[in-house]
Image 1: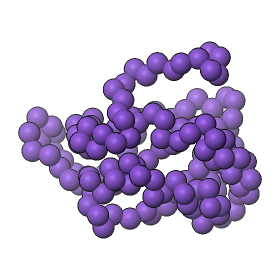
Image 2: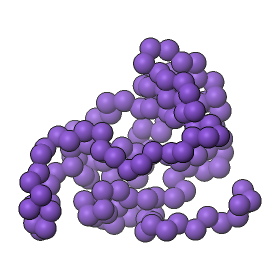
Image 3: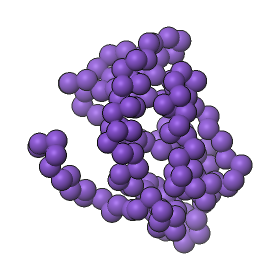
Image 4: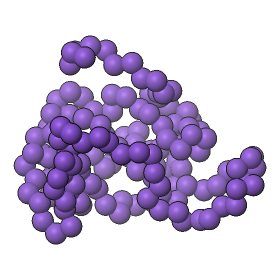
Length: 148
């Protein structure tokens, strides 16, 4: 597909300022897809910042480069944290006192086959019979992914 071709999403998408819709989607679907959060210039700036990263500590190199706690390494990453619309969604779902516990950057190389949907942490064990219960559970943890 040419770079300038319009991408067609298969999932429901939301505007950055649709706080009601994105909050509802997080509770019902477990994710909210918000295209266009970053401008093309910002995307390039983040890509360039990832290219400048040097691995250390618990970082991992391979078909995917995995850099941890990048907000401490370059101002470009710090600016992604308190982004209007994104932080509003985090606060709407987890409360105004929610906080960042890390910021990771991944760079995938040719041959990387992606990740299957998964759960990193199960904070509360829920019996299977509660899946049809109309009550909602609190969201304790969420991740904002910026696909570049």
